[in-house]
Image (cartoon, rainbow, N blue to C red):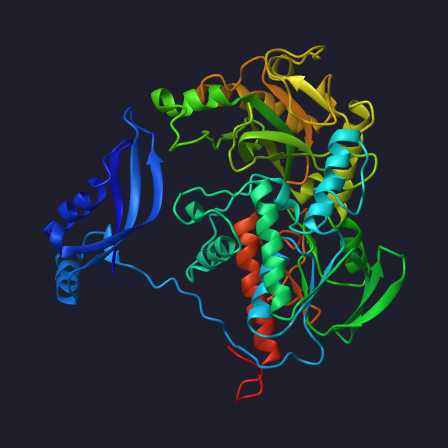
Length: 547
């Protein structure tokens, strides 16, 4: 099998154009091409004429022909042997250990850690403080429609994690030499995600489809002997001489608590489990402050972004709603960039704490809402919020509480027109762009919503972005505050064995521990951590475990 890259064709090419192009590139007769499959499809809009760009895997008439072509094109980087992307479990046991591994958190990282442990026969126990995804969805809508927050069941907490209420983006820039991302994607498709996610260059699922996928993955885990306990919050850890020995778990359904023996614990907390971070810090688990970003959500008409990015091809069904990625290095040394861009989506209330306002973005699979939105955020470092590992959380809370006050209460968010923000004047009414955030937006002055250095950098960046995407700095575009949960404000540091630096048997993982930055990378990290647990649980001939 060969893999060919950079195969470019017009947008509306004929169905037989791709195999014809492959045969032409290889210099073979069409009959010598037995079959081909599209591995990835993207588009190149850098020139006036938009082109589709394919990566294709090709099967030829004979092994001899393949060997001859590989020799002929040995210096061509776009014609190579197709890599083996199949996944193989590191071990498989016939019976689970007496003390089963525990996974804390059931977002993307926790789901894949639990799934892999279940596939290997370890029958993991999963503890999730939130509710099942459909019950959680009702609670989340309660905040959006009625302004009523459930601190244990919301955008941040519950089955599926924060990624459930997002665009469901499934791409990442992580290094992935073992093609674990492919394993993640195949498991999603197996659980009901559209097969298209295996093909397009920037795949996404969307919230409604992701709900069903998460449910099906839960069913797979339980069918393999895993146990998933919802509304179970870890309130304490038992550590003896640097080794995990157990957890104290609070049953949020009745308020009771119980002790759970646990020698191997995967911490897949997500980036908003602030009370759990504080408890772990108090128990001496090593962690450190890390950089993250803060800013606002920006909304434009999706049609404006489509026209600016796709020109005459805007609205083509094969291309869908256009996205963007922007960065600006401001004169004051700060970097301003777009984050979690949601084409045809909505801005959502994403707080998990009473009396605080947090924004995020979400899209459905169709991406057919009227507005495009993205975070416009400014990078900050621990030097901006000194005070130890938990200082970033304090900083986030200050911004979120102030946003609640600026919005006038009831989880209404403060907002401002881009034109007024750049000019340094308060907004008193909306223009042509209707903000999508619920429970609502109060037009005001956002100058006090972020530190002065961030406001200065953003006022410089928005006109600069307007030069890259025509209309981006349109006066009536809406900024909604605040975006603070871009990533975890701390890192629960681990070693090469994926265990905490000072607590053996504790495996910090995913976004909350700062080892992932989205659904795909969190899933990959969950797989790698599950493999690390398996290596400790299964003795090798040397008695040291696998690997």
